[in-house]
Image 1 (cartoon, one colour):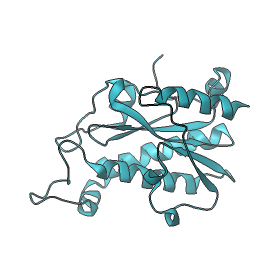
Image 2 (cartoon, rainbow, N blue to C red):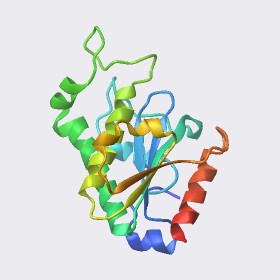
Image 3 (cartoon, helix red, strand yellow):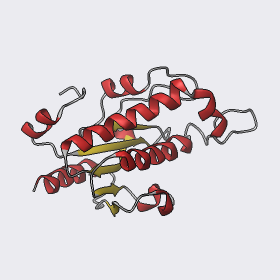
Length: 189
């Protein structure tokens, strides 16, 4: 199943919960946003409109992607709005206001985004900040965010009071997507 944009009717009729998924690439630190509990090449092409040397189009290998966070909403409309806001914030940072974003990022001695090997932690931190901003905009009274590890959320002062943070269950490194299915089933009850 292709992972193109899905409206609330499609999500309801196919048994998906009002959730937004953030997946991080364990090799590069890049983050992809999704309405479904998986990543696809289509999503990556849509979210990386102008890949470059510092932020290349990520590899689609499924073993490189781990769930970073799952935001669970009360309504499908809020989940769709949050997904749109996340994609829009990435577009602004990568294309429209690229110069401003580049000035705020930590740099190495050559003036490039700081990295360790191919891993650039800047992208994960920016995605977490974008999630906080997107959740502030939504009208839902309470949002649950399930994290791969609570330390990924950063400082608690940057989150509004309507967001509750929970840790995902741990089954092992290969069973991460089983947890996402359990979260979906729990949200639909």
